[in-house]
Length: 72
Image (tube, one colour):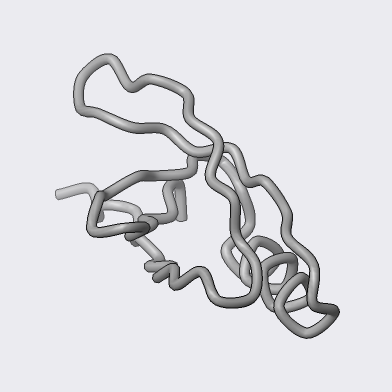
């Protein structure tokens, strides 16, 4: 898996070259411990722009694995 899709505040973001389960565990730990963390994501197509999202209790976020495209 090369990318992870993120839906945050109705907007789509992505994370490249990061472990899906690791990112999910980081977010889950913040929720469980009642703290917030910043995650670095990309926003936009073609020439993505770096963005920081604050995640923690009460802040909804969706994390979607984007599978590698199969070579044909």
